[in-house]
Image 1: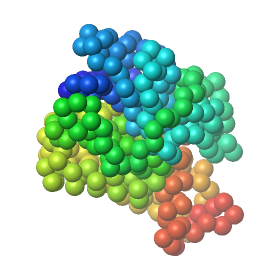
Image 2 (image 1 turned 90 degrees about the horizontal axis):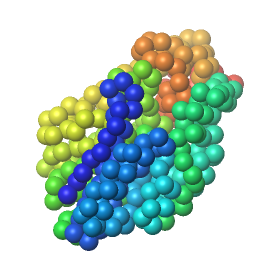
Image 3 (image 1 turned 180 degrees about the horizontal axis):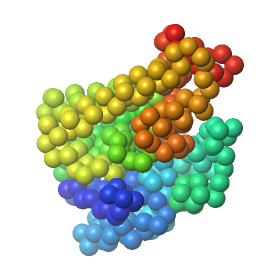
Image 4 (image 1 turned 180 degrees about the vertical axis):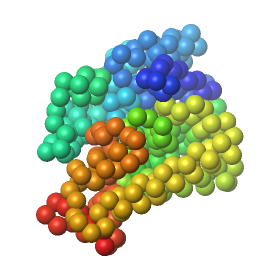
Length: 300
């Protein structure tokens, strides 16, 4: 059985945690962040009522709003923490997480109290990742099979969980928010598109008919899921085209291309979008469509 718990995050965006409850034990997918203790406690109360122990906390990825209450939940349950090996450093060292996630380009975005309040202060305590998963692993909580699916790209290492008997895919942020005031972003456009294609194939094969995630409303049929996937595939192409248009002759800095891309799409310039634009620039240089000289980029 799958249970979802949610609270408003900002605007019409929610933050969710999910439980997969079997006959023998349960697993919690993401633990939200500090400030959402009441939501996560609701999930723990349900398990107490059912008399089912929480055996695993599965982090889809190591962003602050997915790992922030790992330690809080673990202190009450002794559950093992499961996550992609790439995210181990971030989960086990929140200060490193903050520096690399938020301050990856310190010459462009400086540290600030507002950023610390948004990210670092919601990130929780360091927690050891007990079990690393990269995809194709299986969990058997009793009564059904839960398969780990590699859905990397939003970050270098992200996983989803496919409850095979229910044909339900539980995801973190691979279906990025498109209508946010800032870019939700990704750090590897090619890998991100590969993960979107993974979801498309799972739906096309009939293995997935429902998709639930950390922020989006539940997607309840194949047509709805495929349209959401296609929207994000188009968004990646649109961003790439926009970046290529920024520097057709004169070379521009990363900062300038980020600001112009943000302005052209009506997005607030923020650290997530900066990392996304940088990842596109690196990929475009790798395939010979742009060149970089002394920190500036020009379309070839």
